[in-house]
Amino acid sequence: MANVVTSNNKSSRMLTVRETSHLLHIHPNTLRRWSQYGIIRAYRIGPRGDRRFKPEDVAALFEEREGSPADKRGQEDAKR
Image (cartoon, rainbow, N blue to C red; front, side, top):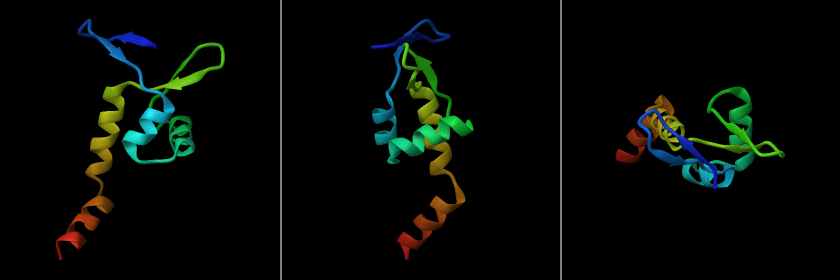
């Protein structure tokens, strides 16, 4: 598995496309497109250029998506 050293000198496991798309509840192709458009940062590793994602980047995107107006509308509708 690929590891990356963070600023606080702890090793953090990088997430695969499959793991990240599962956490975000999106299709893997959507995640690939988001990384292409710069919505989430992907790190390319190995000779094939496989994408890996930092857990903290995924958490930040998840928090951003949870706070979006569309999600808040859905939460308000669920309360009714």
